[in-house]
Length: 111
Image 1 (tube, rainbow, N blue to C red):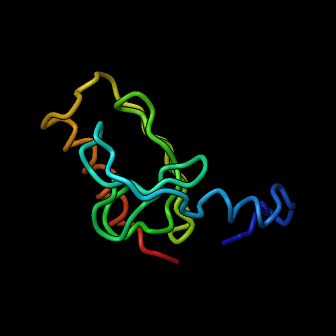
Image 2 (image 1 turned 45 degrees about the vertical axis):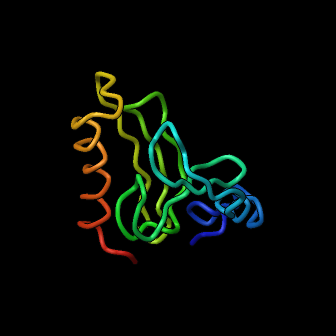
């Protein structure tokens, strides 16, 4: 991790970055129908059951209203923003949307 630096410039304090993805709550999200870890501002990844794909424990981000998601994965050194049309809710189309994040996690190696 860069601890809040970008191109050698300190953008955030290291403790700010740490607090952004430090787990605060681990609960079952009834709306999503799955367990979700939360920091004090972000939805966090998990080893197995994660909306960001498998093996994404260090990921932090948030979903928008159904088909919008933005997240950072420090272990893969990527940030992702996805926007999709439509509002599938908890349907087979939502599984396809979640599979996009899983594919990203599987195809981009950790650094």
